[in-house]
Amino acid sequence: MNKEPNDPLLMDHEADGIRELDNNLPRWWVWLFVLCTVFAVGYIVYYHVLRLGSLQAAEYQAEAAQGDALKNAALARFESDLATLKPVSDSLVLEQGKQFFANLCAPCHRADGGGLVGPNLCDLDWSHGSNYVDTVKVIINGVAEKGMLSWRGVLKPAEIQAVASYIYTLRGSNPPDPKPPEDPSKPVVPMDFE
Image (cartoon, one colour):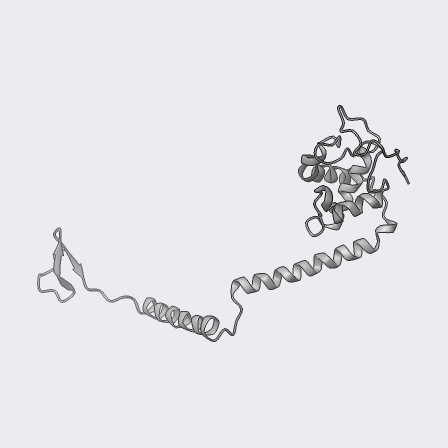
């Protein structure tokens, strides 16, 4: 269908033989545009000019603080019950502990617990106590002077218990070419297998 050159909807300019049609936008589109613009102005005034609302970064920090408080409360409850903790013997928990050990502990203690940068976890020479609760405390608090990280706040209490239970199963095993005891002059203390 050919339009007449004097059609009021056709604009005067032409490009490559194509003439532009001067067509009004649909009313719903215009109102949507106006509402978006009004919302944007209101948003800027509310959040950036008057500072009545929290921006995303502040909301994230508030929620992160709440999460940290929950984690710290759970760890505090866990630590208050430390004296009564016993190693878990459930195979699923031990497998989970093995996975955490492989990912987090093996770089320093070797996958078989024989020791690399960190001490041998399979021998009878334990510098920070040989019972299960001592192992849990070392995982939670770390040993900063020896380069051991604190896993407090990184691992959940159940995950700490799973790793400690898995480490407990390594005691007395004989991996190939283990790291020697850290202090050979110190007498070997028998392990407490409570």
